[in-house]
Amino acid sequence: MKKVIIFIVVLGLVAIGTSYLLKPAHKEVKPAKLLPADTLLMVELVNLEKSIDGFKSGKLGQKLKEIDLTGVMQNLEVPIKAIEEYEKTKSAVLSTLDSMLFKELFGQETVLAVLPPKIDHLTPEGLKKALDSLVLISRPKSSAELVEFVSRIFTKNLKFQTEVYAGYEIKSFELDSDITVHYSLADGLLVVTLDRQAIITCLDLRKNQQPSLDQNEYYQNLRSKLASSGTKTFVYNNTKKMYESILNISRLIIKEEKFSDMERSLSAFKGFKAIGYASYDDGSDLLQSKTLVMIDKKGLEPVYAKAYFTKPGKNKTLQIVPDNTLFYYWANNLHLKSLWDIYFENQYLNDEEKESMKTSLEKEIGVSFDEVFQAFGNQFGLILTDINTGGLFPIPKLTFFMETANQDTTAKLMDSVTQKSGMVLQKEEFNDIKINYIMLPFGNDVQPAYAFFNGFCIVSINHQLIKDIISTYKNGDNITTDRDFLAVNKGLTDKNNNIMFVKFDQLIDKIKELVIFGRNMIVLKDQGEAEKAAVVISGVINPALDGLKMYRTIGSRTFTKEDEIEADIYYKIDR
Image 1 (spheres, helix red, strand yellow):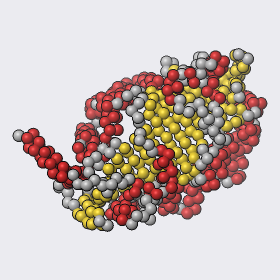
Image 2 (cartoon, helix red, strand yellow; image 1 turned 90 degrees about the horizontal axis):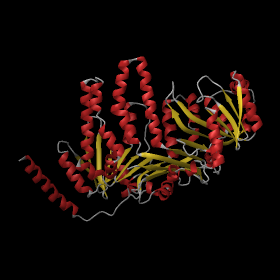
Image 3 (spheres, one colour; image 1 turned 60 degrees about the vertical axis):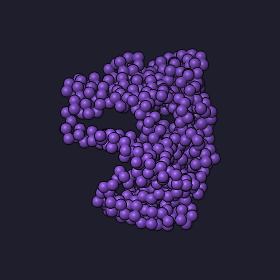
Image 4 (cartoon, rainbow, N blue to C red; image 1 turned 120 degrees about the vertical axis):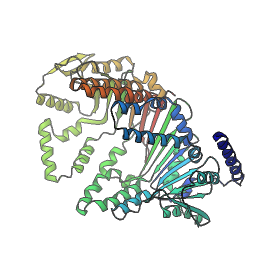
């Protein structure tokens, strides 16, 4: 009988709702037209329902679904009240995501925005204004009127108040004693805020045709370059306004005499105009995301300008990276003098303290800082080919490299550091390249070594890795021939400022080995704690890590343009 009643009610809702659907359709209005031009942040999710369904059916979602967190908590003897609270929350979240109303509301286009907060004093009431700056806008799958009608059915116990403003109805209800929700249906869009003035601000844009976010030049620029038919997520941040808002709020928190220190700590963002981000999914096994940073070069602090706008260059280190590399990073924007200046600036030292610190460090390393700055070029990076977990402790097969501008000075620095450590350098030649290394009582895997090769100072955990790099350069079997690298090589071999490559699924396997190693260490100290760790590892950590292996390979590149920095990331996935 209950099922029959539900069936009749659903039929009734559909019948009544159909009359709403037959109303003349609104001309589609972009959510950005309902947001003010000075909006700080906008996050747009396209077809959220499809994204959630895709996540749940994907390997990561399926593995997370296997996790029995209730069982894990019971085995760990977590209090029953905490377990019940977790189950209640989980049930509420899952039922909400699966509900018809959620899919109707957020199934097509959803926007969360942050307007400039008007915080004038640090009291609970003042801080609440930060929440009042939030705006939620959705384009329901069906007409907004139908969704609003159905939502009133499901929220019949709430008391609604209605007012008419500029031809739009604003409905309000209390979520609890401190929070009131305001919403309105505007041109086919559902607009929701926690502050009456915020929703009026949005509606005023339609009433008075005032400048909206859609007309903001930063937004227009980023939107035109990032948005496309395959866009899954779009994010816009007015970094210039955000920077000003943070400073204004800081003035309320920090004493006047300390404010200059705060301003200095944020100086890295001075000159940033706006940031845009978009992710794309065309249904293939290659996902992509792109970030654009708009910068006013003249507004940058001089100490940061050189690092931000180094000219993109050809990456010659690709020729020395073995094809079995798990993780690789390269960049050409290392400016030691600038880094040194930034470090000192953030230490808030006076000139006398700076000079004392500089003299002390020069004494330690045995060469002057001017020599150090002249010794190295701008390129640096690292190569990780494996992590050995079979010994007494994990040993990463890790190699660092730095471009040398003056090899003699660099050699002098390395010799000075080695002598001060009291270690005796061993020397070996391999393919006419001199390799210097230190013998330690930890086996062949730990023999710190360095060599000068192909314009770089190469420092590694053992000299065999340096031999592998030299051999890779000689035989040509480098990373650019690896099929995993080729799968994400969308500009990684072009001129860039930095690139990163990760065999993510293989790196996850190594992380799992490290987790087991950590658990074995716990066994030696406390058997009881080890048993608890085993429950968490088998019940939570391993399934989550196995799910993350769906991201097989990751490749990224960053490069500067005239007034922009672009960062592209590609993910080869196993759906």
